Image 1 (cartoon, rainbow, N blue to C red):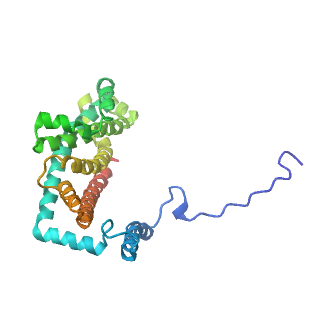
Image 2: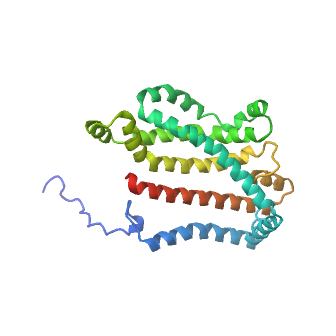
Image 3: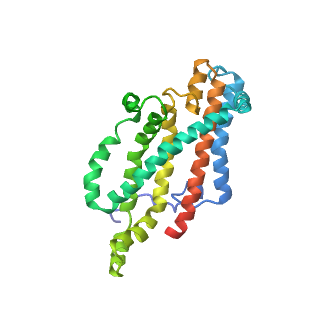
Length: 275
């Protein structure tokens, strides 16, 4: 008898597979297998759709056609010229954004006065789409490279600033208190505690916004460009050369993946001594 009398009793739960357990570690072979499947499944779907004729080749070229188009562009040298032109713009525009946003984010994350002064304006500006500035940038900077660099800068600097500030605010107050107790000065605390502790998180923010920079560079290269991967896509679109468009998209994806892997490796190495 009692309030729970007559209720069915639950059987003991079966142990779940690590693959479906919340935050459970998985083995290295399982991790590599899942990573391979994440590429293999979409690729196989692409092959099936193109080979079966379910989608016209004008709209979805086969992987073989895309490979031929990429090799043709590489053979003429235009693909490498375009890749270098685009990479230069990303390095200059996003590099400038990092140089501005990281110190500003540290200032906002460390000093309450810095947050109170800068965050309202930056919080507003981050909602303005970078593409909306194109007419103004053409008027201010002309049709050359400065306007393209400015689009990349505007599109990434505000988000990277706020993300950096959030990382810096995550430094435990106990670390700061202990540092002051041991006689450290404000500059030493900032240099030896705040920045090293925040560095892995700041690299993660850069990694996220580097992907955004590659998105914005295609928009930037619509402004009177004569080289660049975005320019090559627009040029191929005019002649319905979808195989070239796909080839360029694959190159953009591989370039972005390489940058992401390098930043992950850097973050891992930094995290060892910053943890």
